[in-house]
Length: 237
Ligand code: ADP
Image (cartoon, rainbow, N blue to C red; front, side, top):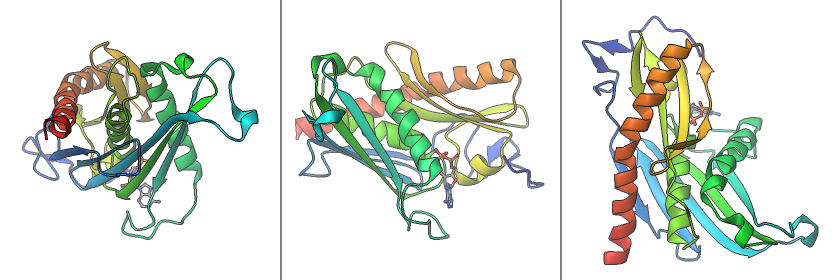
């Protein structure tokens, strides 16, 4: 978290005019990559993520196979052109970490034991980044898995929360991500009220943290509704 003298909330409005608990414009579409088993494109404002799912399919090389369960391989990549200053190509430490925690965020909703020796491959490409990319990507992954027909206990909703001058906010844009008091990306199963990802960058009291998490779980229900609509749209067409 960097510090800035710029006010992040003025007269109750954020930098982009949003209220503290207001989401950016959200767009979701499934079935955007014909060759994948399932796919989705999700944008939160200027942040755009594309997800492609392949599998469950037999895992090779064979020594990677688990005889008792299937596995998930999650690959988060931020395109070189997704940010203002060209990003160095190739997986960074940040991308490796995000891939790992995102995989852990999805696994609890899957019935991996039913698919021994297989892999479900999830490829994420961030084609434009303006904050909250990992949670935007998790929404895309959730939709792509559902689109692929992979059995799931629940969809997975991703949403970031934060705090500016003691006020909880949701869906941080890039500038807020860099400069607000704290940034908490969260993923959860909306019908099970189960949190599967919770990270924190910044310093907060337990009370502040709880307020942000509660707020994210509440506003996140809107995202769940949009996911369901996006899935219905494909199958009603
Ligand atoms: P998240 O995107 O999940 O919030 P971070 O907190 O690591 O993850 O990143 C916050 C934001 O910082 C990103 O969404 C992106 O807008 C910006 N950012 C991340 N990495 C880079 C980079 N290499 N170059 C420029 N901007 C970046």
